[in-house]
Image (cartoon, helix red, strand yellow):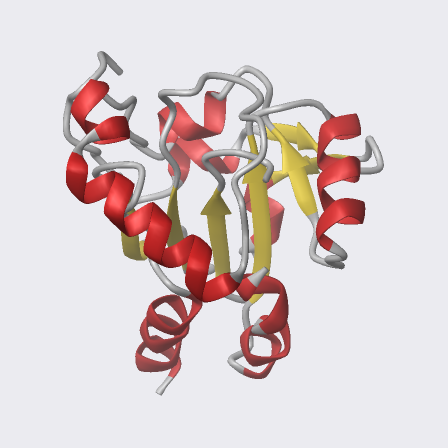
Length: 132
Length: 49
């Protein structure tokens, strides 16, 4: 997983990196084992944090539009990954956010469709610009 | 949020700060604690996979 590989860069940028998924702690633990990652993974089965973060619930074209399918195929080929079974609400999209100690959301990228994800490099660039 | 509506991230994380979620080891984590001392990057996954 790209974020796992970039974890020391987040540490070097002085930030805490946390993943949040929409399932149970057991699913989160399985995900960590399967992906071989050491990052903390929080379990938000009720999706309360997704709602508070303003994450989008996708419509049909946000999940299966031609652009989304093409992007998924390219990403899968590039990183040699295959999406496994989705747990939770299949229409729930994710996103990323950088929060400062004073509670300000200094940067965010919430997904507009299933293929719209911020890369670790984008998140790191936002972090570095904030602490520079 | 109704399906298809644009994402609407907040400018402040006040609503997020009070949310408590279990981690992969079933330990409760209050989200506000994650950024109380240094910036936090939160990533919401679409799926575990």
